[in-house]
Length: 117
Image (cartoon, rainbow, N blue to C red):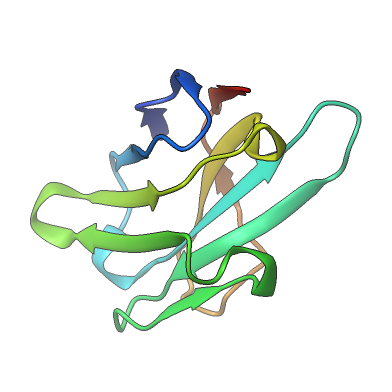
């Protein structure tokens, strides 16, 4: 089970840190991805933290987001800076317990991020 938190309504230029706590399974050996889905658009990858702690980012997100994980807390984080209204979306975390960068078998319910101008 995955549960995201940390979303909310913020003003343009603000920062947010989202958290995703995993229960059950083998978090330490799982690849953890962050995705987002804006209204009326498809779900897109933001980035991912691999089981070996290497981190990958979608090209469009590089430089503005940082993904980290705390295996002791079964938690993965998404730090987002300099938010703009285009970042408004539901943000999801997902887990691939096989550590193969997908497909992601487990998904959280998502947390809404709304950025006002």
